[in-house]
Length: 196
Image (cartoon, rainbow, N blue to C red; front, side, top):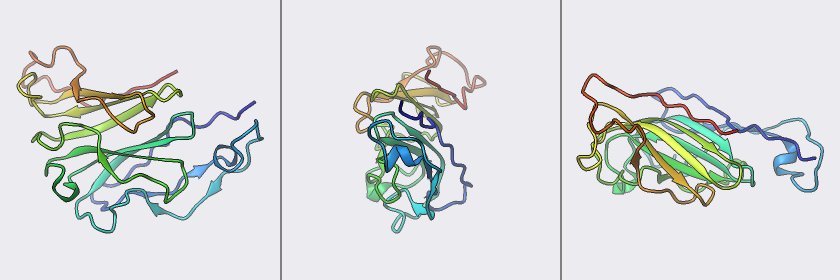
């Protein structure tokens, strides 16, 4: 029987942190012995290493990272940042992601998860992720973007999904169905998501 991996590994960073530093405790069976029902070993601890591959060139804070395992060997990390990725993202707070195999140093370059991040002006934050363990992911977060006039800017819950283990994401969409009509005082924030 395969050992069950932890689904979510939250890592808290201060808002002044410049780079995401990652020290994962990986189950030996998940990376090293992963095949054939190997027995779980003691956690393997590594030295902290940058998760975001642009850590030596970015200049703005990265924070509120969430890391989860998708069940097929892929880990997904999501976080919020004001970084503009060399001009490919705006200067507001956006949601970024990176995929990896759980081994420090084996993460894809940061990319925008909120697909409207190149042109939006409202901040996106408080991202949460969940996977069904079969390559499908859901990301939810608080957004202050009006999504081309379809919602207000007071704060609504936005969503994107992936069906290829987090490598690509659908267009940003409104999750709370009253987002186009709720008022300035109706701030929706800090979403939570889980899978069974």
